Image (cartoon, rainbow, N blue to C red; front, side, top):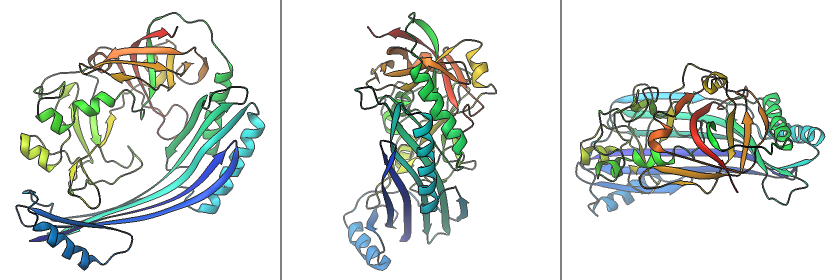
Length: 412
């Protein structure tokens, strides 16, 4: 019988902002411990919040093992690795001081608007170790500056949003972005002609990847319920389209370089689609074994439950071109707020757009009227896919953009 322990420790300092004033400060400190027993056929598991007696947990796991919950997969073994990625503003007092300074500047520079939401710094420590020589440790820190923007003369609850997530605090970049959004919002563009346009999304916007998560879900794929089922080895999208499941620290600001089962990929990425060719859906051990698919290391789960297929971070490979080059001398439509849209079962997509800006590849020019965008999964990542910018367009981390041609109409 083998023993294994998985621990996460999450610490967060957050400053709540209401109407451009600091409202409150809060702190989170959450530790979760999961222990597992493997007998080669079943798994016993027990979990605890906070400090705990590990031996008492293992006793509970042994009782759980008697329930005969199937888990006939070998635990990860014989691997040791440790990583640490630090970020700015982890000190609560410094975070509070910088938040106050930013809000003071915004009150001066954008008196027509009020700003609310949260600035926070966080640290996630994750570790997994067992009696087969596995010992993996990950510590990743990050900061998140996020504001909801409201025009004081508007009756709306939300008029715009601004912010970024990363590891380096860039006050000037954040203020420049926020001022650009406010200035563009104030420059209303009334004329618009329906047609096909380059539509620009933030590269971490989940709106356009929602169907991809579903289509590449290993259980749906293996059971034949996915639009991509049975197409491994086939060219399904543009040759310029490569999609990774990634655990690289540079690609995201949460999680660890290993999954809930201790699986890790050699370069912390797994290409699910490469140069338009479908390689594999994302899988955990159970899914990979059940459907004879490659194991991609996408296991997740609750601290007091068995590992199960999770939702890994998906990332499109950047192109060699800047955002301006991807637009190919055209003006793009930057989608800042789009809610209420969805994909149909056959992959067609449509969404209302509550806030879009005319975008020249470097700056927002003005606010467009409310729009509707539409396309399909095949077109979005096939012939109408332009690419992901190689540059962070606003000189802030994590501000690359994805460009694709879509049908755009003015909402009547």
